[in-house]
Image (tube, rainbow, N blue to C red; front, side, top):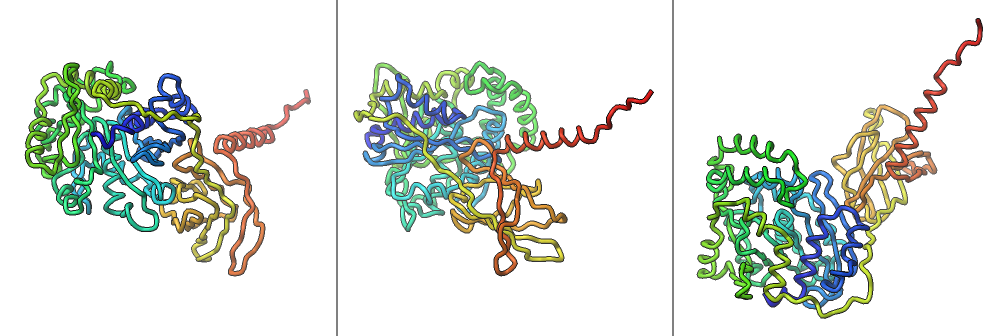
Length: 468
């Protein structure tokens, strides 16, 4: 574990901060007097994948991996009903990279990897997270390595690691068979930190284990005193009905039968007597045999083990107990916010099919590749074409001659923005029209529309008759 000890707390605090929704509160937390000298993070920005409510944050340190400038991308773990649906979705997702846990993969595939290829190229990159967040970060790392070839090419990063805490296993053996010939496991790209008695990383034969431990799983979600589950008031009912349904078909071929290990596993022993960290390499047959035996699920009181050992705070305690040192670099500045601003400069429309009233809109500006949803005339645009980070386009058919209202939101903005008051500014050769527009927040736009409606209602009111 020596090669990750020097920046392990950057991973820890990034993972912990990913649970905080507000940027100002994240910065306040990382600048707190009690922790500011326990990490070397200097800047941060938070993001969210709206369709699955997956929060993530990006932090930066000048003294990260290999003591060099490093970006950390941390994904939030489970703390909502939607998160637990993903956790329990143990059906197979068969992909070109192998067979994955469907719930984890469905989140990872929605992460905009262009964030890495466009903004983090030339630096080191560490993917991290706790529990569900660790599973998502691991799959995203695989996609960056195998699909985006992130270590080569024009937009490469200098080096990459995935370091997670209490992460459940993510897929079957065919993933390992794809990775092994490439040497990614031997090079130490994947590190999984596990408390010795944490039950979550220990589900190997997931179908059998859920059948055997339905009662204890129910016990977990019913006891909301566990901080991980404290925000969920009706999760017990959801899991109860879900597992009753799943028990009918748990042995079906579309469920994950055997989750598999790969990478380097660091086991934090639950003892104040020994400070040894047990390290096992999945490429070593002897290590693998010991690891599989150790990870086999054998707990009778799953609720108790979750409360004691599957908490990020417990991981922090054990990291300190096992000699992981705080960085010896003193930061001379406060953590500040990274600015990934999306700016719209031009909006151009062109009629491409007069009979069907079909228009093509082109938007030009900067960082437009971070737009994750866009609505025109109140309709979501599903085929938004990202030609580059500075240009996007879409087609839409309309039966009205009124200029559109365009609403959009990026991965890094907590609120949506609206392009309104569109007016033709100039006509370009080829039948294109460039529009002037006003850009306001969705909140201000809704307020403006409400005021207009109230004004119209006032005008429609008939004056009271004064005749007798």
